[in-house]
Amino acid sequence: MATPKFKTLYDPVFNNNPIMLQVLGICSALAVTTSMKTTVTMCIAVVVVLMGANIVVSAIRRFIPGSIRMIVQMVVIASLVIVVDQFLKAFAYQISKELTVFVSLIITNCIVMGRTEAFAIKNNVIDSALDGLGNGLGYSVVLLVVGTVRELFGMGTLFGVKILLPVTEAGGWYYPNGLLVQPAGAFFVVGFLIWVVRIFRPELQESE
Amino acid sequence: MQQDSVLKTFVVAGVLCVVCSIFVATAAVALKPYQEANKTLDKRVNILVAAGLVDLSAGYPDAGEVETLFECIRPIVVDMKSGAVFFDEESLHKAENPSPGSEIAIARENDVARVRHIPQYAFVYVYKDAGTPITTMRDLHSYAKRYVFPIEGQGLWATMYGFIALEPDLNTISSINFYQQGETAGLGGEIANPAWQRKWVDKVVFAGKASEPTITILKYGFPNERDDQVDGIAGSTLTCKGVQNTVRFWLGQRGYGPFVNKIKMGDE
Image (cartoon, rainbow over all chains, first blue to last red; front, side, top):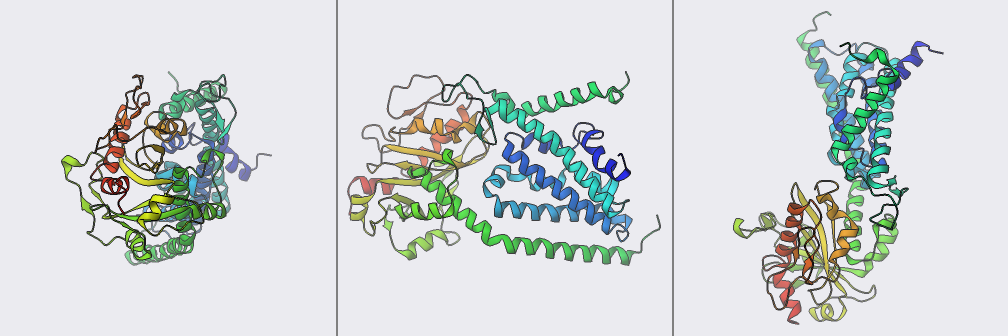
């Protein structure tokens, strides 16, 4: 089952998750996870950019001069992000308004440049595509978990639909925890996730 | 790794830049019509929300619905200095595309909303019945059901953009909303919460015969005793101050005040 191809895809989702283990891309993970709508859109955008950047960089890897390697990667990533941003503005205007600058900031997301530099520049197109997809999904899994916790307990809704009825409105029993909607709330949730992962994978814990 | 020649480096960089620019430019140009349509639609939806015709908690209306509802909205142009009103297409076009340098600068000591300058010709959106044309001041007096004023001003972190709608007496508030703001989520960001915005309904902008707006947002928890006082939001004193200043500025003599006076006095 664990063929090398499958491993390329599967590894970054569970074993070597970019957020939980490499602690990359935290800034956007904190900023966009206040509601599930923005979270899902952000996940899709990151997966598209990661795969696209990995494929393009891998395809032209033999032509890229070493001295301007990083600049080339940056140009490719930036172009992809601008195009994704333009698409969101054209077809998902409301959500793109909520995401504001965070789509453009995918350019500086450490995961994207990290993967093109660490993987795509040395590997073939198919492996690079899988690596991009895997890392994108790894990022997405964490974002979706964080987004679910924050929107459900922070606002009592999921995808904007009321699940827990808040006390303040409509006379429900649940009082939304405002802390979770704040950036600090995301830190708590991400920290908690990292802790859970390390309980199940003790080999990750640093030696004293 | 072998050393690449300088020439090759330049050629690769050049080709890459050209390819990427074509890629980006194509996407931007091809998608522009959709983006423009979205922007216009969004602005119209926000005007409709302010006029009380659309409730966003019931979902975002589609383009056709907005088109129909917008027949009840008549944009008019107001000269911010004199309060004169223009109804013709040319003036609407002029207000839509202001000539550079035509803005009115606001002196620092008067600039409570921190807008720096305001347009010379500003839009006011009049809510009326779909079939009624409004082309004169007399029509305005007879048919206007609400006046929607675009407002903007500095909050705690960023500029807040919104609309305030007044009843035809130009004193009673029928709604306020903010469609773009960057205040602290959960605290100042609550200015976008319809539950708080509803507290403005039926409040008055001017107490008694005051010529400048007296509307005040109280600190959270203070007893609300007058009809020109709105309850504040907990932990958002500075944002509320910004909202109060914004409303006071735009409805005051340096904002839409001259127009407001004109309508109040029944000027033809």
